[in-house]
Image (cartoon, rainbow, N blue to C red; front, top):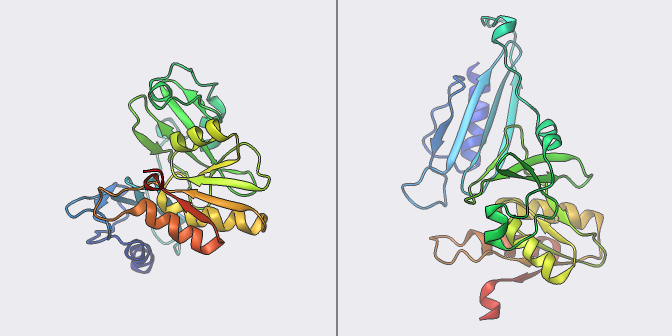
Amino acid sequence: METSISSFEINLVAAGFKSVDVQPDSKIKRSYIKGDRRGTKNGWYVLNVDSFRYWGVYGSHKTGERHSWSALHDGVLSFPRSEPSQKRAIPSIEAIWGKGIIPDPKHQYLVTKMVDGKGLRQLHRQLLVPYRNIDGILAAVGTIKPDGQKRFLSGSILSGAFVLLGEISDRVYICEGYATGASIYQALQTATVICGSAGNIASVATQIRKKFSALEMIFMADNDQDSEINHGLIAAEKAAGLVGGIVVSPNDFL
């Protein structure tokens, strides 16, 4: 058990988490992440255990990144089993996405951002944002509330997954958030890729480059100049360097 817990803790430390208290208690805990503003606890993690394995999830509320981890144990641990009436199935991201309908054009978020909701679905009052891997398989679903609050559904794995508006031909625009991407696509009618977070841009860009070797890639950077660390611009420049792309930021138009 200690080896498995230590392995999960190593993953957290490698991701920049500080002062973690890892226990398989199924409780979501918060942590400071290296590089974030001092005093914040944007990092979150949870470790669970069942009859066969330890499994954990961790991520950042700031960037939207989410990662899953698991490890088998020797099976000697004994856990009480719930009665059938006490069991509760957690819907998969595919099931939830499948329940979504065409978004209401009067949804507060769409109206505020002046975008048409292309590629989205709506479930109750929340917009659903589908992130697929390079093979087109649904890997993560983001949610957007009317007031703009964003989260990812449980079970989502964002790394390398993206939203594609339009069809890729000879040029693609790459950005972080949905509203930015939808605005770019509406204005230029050119393929636009939405990565969901700054930390996911490099992973998405390298996947796309492998499939489209001659593609012109333009990174529309979020310029977080008021933050202690300009994550948006740094992430865009890093990704552009990896794939031979071009970076454009709001300051370029001032």
